[in-house]
Image 1 (tube, rainbow, N blue to C red):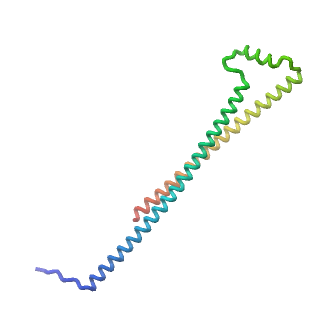
Image 2: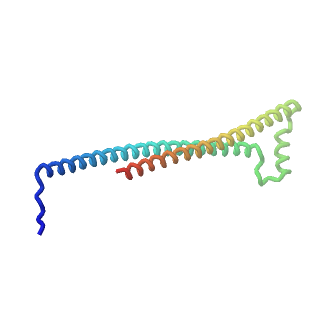
Amino acid sequence: MNTPQPLNSQQLTQDVSQWLREISELKQHLADAQTAIKEAQKQGDHWRSLYNREAEQRRQDVQRGQERIAELEASLDQGRSLPHESEADRRRHYQQALDGLDMSQLQEQLLDLSLDRDRLLLQIQELEMALNAEQQNHQKTRTELTGALADAIALISKTKAQG
């Protein structure tokens, strides 16, 4: 029978030293990977926070814009007659308001109403354009932040795969 030869102490010391070096290197790789993961998670949290803040701001902007549009529409509607009134009733109502005014007063009132209408229509148009711009900016921000989150996740996955 073949009996195993005892290893000499120098060979055992070299083997143990090599294992200890490998263990030390693996510990360092693990620590580096954990640091990279923490950093990627911190960046992900940061981008998520920015995204949420931006999304909330966009939601508030849209809400304010919708409220302003509703106010302007209500203002326009207020200038109009109630929908259940007939045209004859509306004419009578306006005629009563105009009775007793002379021509210059009528012209001035017509001019004021025309200017108000034009101003309100312009405000509605500006608000609609601002709302569209905000929606486009929101979509752009969402896309950019989603890309950043995807990059952070890819970095975390890559770090995990290396470790």
